[in-house]
Image 1 (cartoon, rainbow, N blue to C red):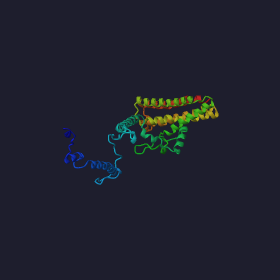
Image 2 (image 1 turned 180 degrees about the horizontal axis):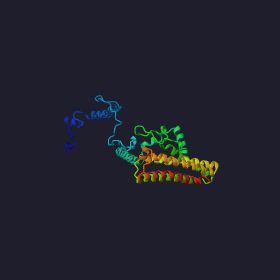
Image 3 (image 1 turned 45 degrees about the horizontal axis):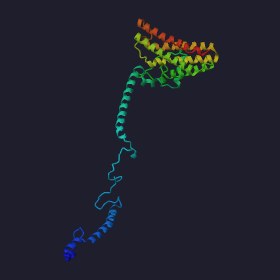
Amino acid sequence: MQLSLLTVRRPSPSGWFALSRDPVEGVPRHQSAAMNRESSFKAPSKRRLRGSNPNMAASHQLFDDTSAGAVPQGAEFPNHGSSSLGIPTQAFLSEPMSNFAMAYGSSLATQGKEMVDKNIDRIIPVNKLKYYFAVDTVYVGKKIGLLVFPYMHQNWEVRYQQDTPVAPRFDVNAPDLYIPVMAFITYILVAGLALGTQNSFSPEILGMQASSALAWLIVEVFAILLSLYLVTVNTDLTTVDLIAFAGYKYVGMIWGVLSGLLFGKTVYYVVLGWCCMSIAFFMIRTLRLKILSEAAAEGVLVRGARNQLRMYLTMAVAAVQPLFMYWLTYHLVR
């Protein structure tokens, strides 16, 4: 019984061989361990060889990868509207709206310009203003002489060329805006000089003088337009023509004030009186051809109630010129 307990059963060769085998079929355990160690050293070297140069294309790849950079696994694609690329996110959204706003604004500006031009042309023909400034030095000299000494002038008719009046530089009888504008500015400067000699100069007083002269000119022009409308005069006089004729009186005002500053108040009255008579005579002879059109065609006055009203209107326009000349200059000479 004891011998049977001490007897060790010898394993069979097949069992021992099975125990000494690795789980991999047909490979011993010690050889399997050596193979595992060898693969652990060789596998990383192969991976490094394939991925050592990321820019090198594989043997089967036809084109190189020219993308900006590989995107790591789990990372998001770059935002093309981010500030890192220099393009704000709102640019893609706001650009169409800004273009639409600019187009809409330009269309509104064009429509507004057309509306303003159309309404202004009803009162003042802006496109014809170049005609009134087509002057030269010879014309200016002759026109100033005509305003101061109009008594010897014979022909007062405006010359026409193909139903269009010639430019002022070719006809001394044509109205212009250059002399009235320059005379108005010179009058303001002379008024400032006169106020300075009286020790009463200030920018506020000079501004009031300029605004007062301009306001009276506007009132005069609108009063003439209203009178022409009430009398129903068919004339080719325009608003610019009336502004030109009403602005010619500043030439006489300048001569009067300068004479008073240089030689005293008595000379001022003499020179201003002469200029007042000259401008009144000039207005009568000029407006007579414009307002009394039927009578001017024959060279004599046609009797009638309507023509009498037109004659009275012409005399009234000529008569108010000396009043404005004295009203705007008497306080400048003391």
